[in-house]
Image 1 (cartoon, rainbow, N blue to C red):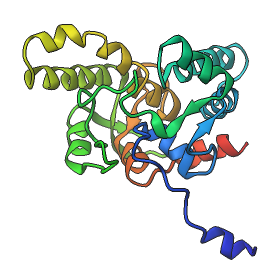
Image 2: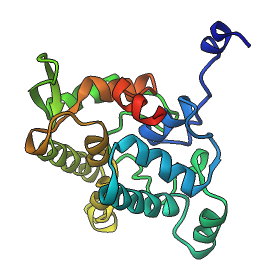
Image 3: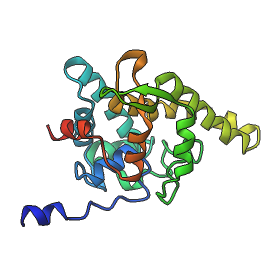
Image 4: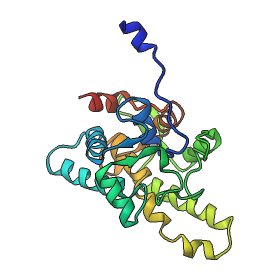
Length: 219
């Protein structure tokens, strides 16, 4: 196959039942398969995207492995299956990490991206100076925390009072989403680190990573 033909090959189709934008981009980019992915393979791929090395890489890898292991179920049989076979990326929806509308709602159950929710994301952020000197909208760790709290509050407002009690663990699940995107895709350091809204939109809409993350994945 020629280079031209290869470059024109369509991106792998990503299942609507994979609700994670980061994992969707990994599948679309051909970094992992869209069905069953062995946990070591998935962990190593995501770990590579972080750009971390040494002890920091080991720590990140351990956290990624634990989350991936429980993604399809927390029962003993699900855990054994995950360890032996891997994570089933096209069966993540309605799994233990699915918050059923208590998240950002950018990507719905049919994998349709809602631009109004991306615009809403931007309202929780501020303008930041990018490494190239330009100014762009983004969210810091503190702003992401406020955004996630607002998402949960929105869901609680739409349900009976018992909803907040029955789903009190949802904020813990959220820690494995936007804060992780900030850690991997963020720009800047320390309290000045921010997640670009434009890059988040590209991740959701185009299922594509920024060039600097692609370089790490291909490294």
